[in-house]
Length: 243
Image (cartoon, rainbow, N blue to C red; front, side):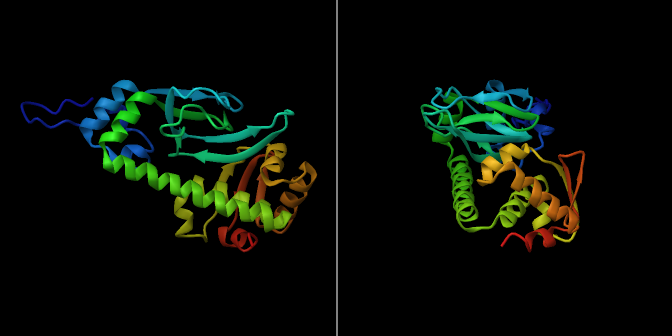
């Protein structure tokens, strides 16, 4: 933590928070320097490779985590072993259901992921005493609900082409949030999911996923390099295909 000098009584934010990419966007945006300093004593950074399980379904929740970098996937497993991908989380989303006792989903790293983990008791105590933090978490929860409802429409009513376009837009808009204000410029990103996972997420076969990606490539809407590196040449052209 930065030493603020002699007798000012002012507390500066911890050094680790100064360089944090999501300091002003995630839950920590609702905290002052003193609260950050206290929380940083309890938190720890962790890095995970794609495919690493972060928490299993029905596993006791002992900590929460803020996504600093990367993409996390949420899935449900049926009794017969079938698995359904039900959601994705990006920086600066909070992993874990506040005041929940056990995880409702299996949570895995879809890409290389960096997390800031906080013990459950520490964050819940802070939430109980901080209206700004309560409002920030409520805002994220409502955003997740809105996105889930939008995704129900995508899965239930849209064509295969529209589903793939919506998926690519979902990734692009989280990689570069400023795109929504300027949809004319290109954006580049790595697909965080395999073709099989994309099909699972969208209710499509692997063959359909590949065919629709190829169609978008041939139409010049996207470029695909090395199988998973995608460049959207102009976002408004992709949006026009989202239905």
